[in-house]
Image (cartoon, rainbow over all chains, first blue to last red; front, side, top):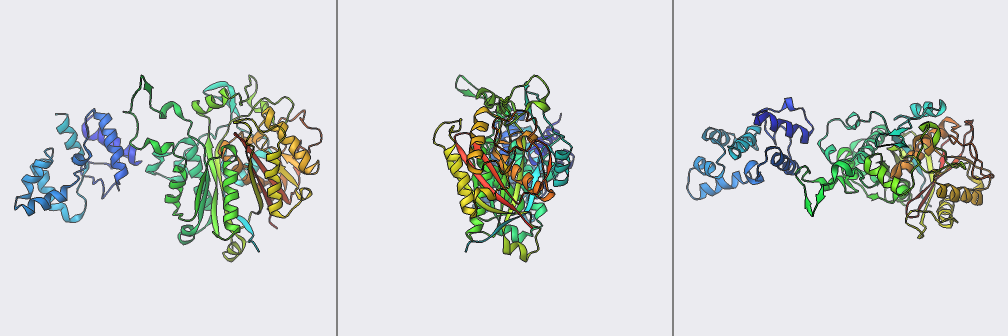
Length: 121
Length: 401
């Protein structure tokens, strides 16, 4: 079973939704209404499912916006700053995120998959 | 002048069905759901077959924090909410009084601990929620949008009757106009069966599960665990009339007390249990001869039934008809009082009382046990529950005409 499929199964279980409704491009907060309590459960389940240490701050892109403000304050470029803070995000994904900021929380299922792939590489 | 409190909605999840017509049909046709427990075939149990909480709640992520007992509790509450027809503004002001038991599903839900090390990988982040008594209440509040005064009561087998009683008093004294009250429970898991088996309280039978459970019979040897839930909507009469609500009955009086005697056994002389019954009569301004029927706790344990038959004889004499609903759906533990009250309302409305099942040789000669189904329309009924630890509760209800 691929990483994405396994993650969809975990999310479907925790959120009581159909796994087939979860795709790589699905937003966790915008589409699946994930709350902080759900993130706790998702972290614990991914921990067990992939036998990795899941940092909630990393996998859920916490502090993404404070990091961007910090970069701006220091006069640094935003993209390299995000790549440094979240090394599991590809440069392409970072560009996507930066373009998507005004539409709401950016976290997608594929970011979780990226995190897991990076941790298990 | 205190207010009159009436019952304006009922929600039930039981082994005999989930709505009044179905339940009465089962009672009239002597159909029950007792069967050997899958975890111990010598123990008869009374499961709610094919129960799926999503049938009542739809898909809902917080189901993950509900034990089986909690699922019955939430499902029954949401049935009562649905049947009430209350809009969101009214639900916003309603109260919520919930009787719950412990989660005894210890097989799969407690972490394995060996040599001081806990295997926590399989646990949810918030697995504690499955063990907090107020989890069902929080889930009901969020699903239904109920935000008023509330209380979670975990007083063993008198819990849900006390929940109804406390809601009654809050409305009667003007703190609330409406409150949902009841409970849900299940003790059929391996942990639940083990708990009561070790306590020596369960009936064991090698024969037919349907004929073995005989409350108030000389041959009785213990109770049969059941599961399910029930909730009522209690409401100020004027409030109910103003919105044209269907009225099922009136709550007239409530009493509760503690034995302060033994951790499991009732006090044999039943004086404190009697005090709870007399308190309910006093609050209703009634005398024992105005009670037409008694829904007994009637667990089928030697100690409860002997104490309770003596109490009934002392307080009411031979006049009221006595039924024992646990003989129909088993002992619902924390939820027994709510389901028994709901079924009493159905029986009063139908004008029909079910017999105490399997009663051949009554343990008390003067008590007027219902032996055969009878057409009877009791005007008033007393519901009695006496729980582990000497928790006593009694509720007096009146038919609405």
